[in-house]
Length: 239
Image (cartoon, rainbow, N blue to C red; front, side, top):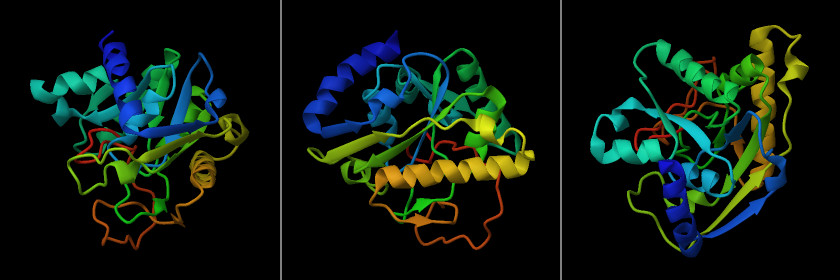
């Protein structure tokens, strides 16, 4: 109930403060499990994405945000699931939490890049989104978010008002096409397809086939898969 109250309050305020355009909203089904896989440029991505569809969207967030009552109420209200990120079990913990949401017929939001971009590029996706789709059979809807970083850049604590944001939903991708392939190959190929569609939906952001890092100047030299499942960025609490 708190989710819908917060959404009901924020929706008219955000539409007044920002010019939000939505394309392809009909691609999001009215019911049934679905994964929304989007590029990640700003903390506000996790505000704008639930804003523009009628269904509840759930993300995973750093458990530290739930340790203080000052922030815990908000993250619970906007549909976040707490996840501890210590050790190698964090990825599997996020996967299990997301699986539970989808098995109950819900909408799960994920940022395959794993963190917000610091250099302006759209980056290579981690395979958690594909593993989740193959495990649950839920379709993946690629989402292109354009302009959210102009509303609140990653290095700014306060948002900028009266900017334009575009949210584009692509056609659903069926993971079943990859079910007969070896798991590792299937996950990589499906993830790459998702990111290709995301880049096409955005239209203006260049793709870089490296993993996103916490600092813009850190350019990874090793593109081997790492166990990140789109967990929350340090300042956003979602991802």
